[in-house]
Structures are given as C-alpha cells and as structure tokens.
Length: 101
Image 1 (cartoon, rainbow, N blue to C red):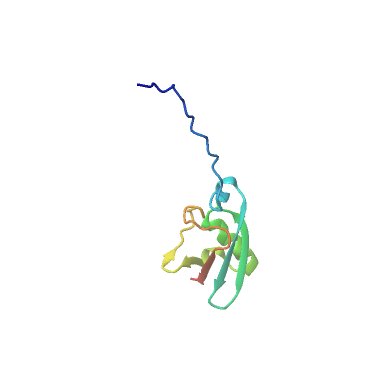
Image 2 (cartoon, rainbow, N blue to C red):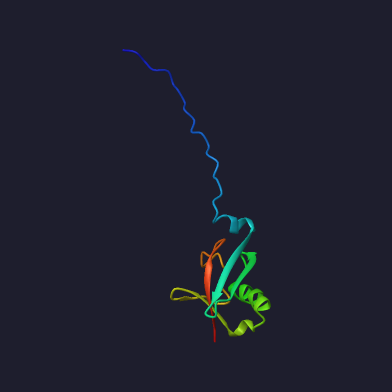
C-alpha cells in the first residue's frame, strides 16, 4: 500500500471589486435627474450620503421655488427628507418625479 505525501493546498485570496453601488460608500458624486408635471427638468450633483432634504434644497435653488413645497417620489414611493439617498438605493442617473404641494 502506497502512502501519499502530505500536501497543503492554500486557497488563493480574491480581491473584491467595487461595483457602481459601492461608489456611494467611497463618496463619489452622483447625478440625480428630476422632472416635474410642467415639463421642467433639473439635474443635481451630490453625494449619495446626502439626504433627500439636501437634494430638494439644491433643486429648489435651480428652480427658484421653496424646498418645503416640493415632494419627490418615484412610482408610489414618497421620499422622506431625513433619509439618505443610498438608503433609498438612489444611484447615478436616477430619475425622480417632482411634485409641488
């Protein structure tokens, strides 16, 4: 009967690659597009760690309206002011609907 020599096989380490969603964690800026019912379009550049309230304030300066009167939503989801963009999974190039209250 033959005996086999002790062979140790080491598992190679795999480096993780960052995806486009990980750009938020690294702090890269993203661009969010908004369109209102009147046909006006606004694009805002900010970080995904910013809040919806910050997004509304930046859009309000471009539109010349009050940010408190703005409501952002997509489909049936109305976005709250104190929650971050990355929590809603808003990434680069996302289109949102803009309504006025």
